[in-house]
Length: 216
Image (cartoon, rainbow, N blue to C red; front, side, top):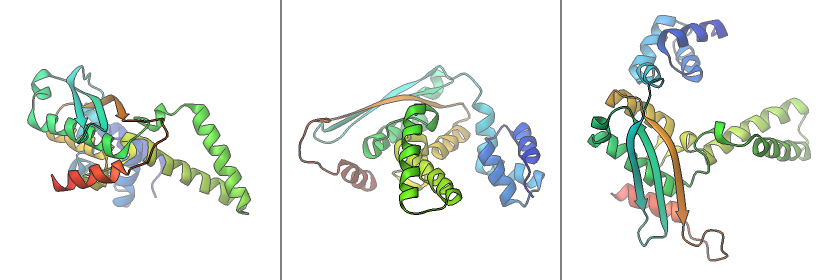
């Protein structure tokens, strides 16, 4: 049985996130030592330990969609100027910029979503569940599931990576930290789309960019 105390102990030993620790323990049937090995194999333990270190160097990456219809700027920080010039780091920054162009996230992480936005969304989803005739306990679970789905749609770190949908941007970030050996932080981004906010014919830019990335 995976208990809160066991998850806490694993976090203290590895520095990995709570959800990663819980998954590791679940996968290893509550065996603490095997869970530590699991996290190390996934590169999550070392990545989490590095996450507390200051990342004040880095680069501002950019991506301009063909024809100048979409433009992205993203700031990604690392610990040293040496790593900032590293090919693997530069490739990561470029990948993140391209992903933002394609997936159009609104926020970096769920923590950045204003409380009033979450409250409003929760109220709407709750009313939807009630209108569907769901019992209160089922409605609550449905709302939580839909909120998590919303995170995957609007939060950069929660989105499936466009070049490899099997991993999220957060997981890709952890993999890169483990590979490079320094803390890396996606600090902020901005995305511009030509004519955004104006009434005009809508085009599926995300699908178009994803196809270009796949063929790159």
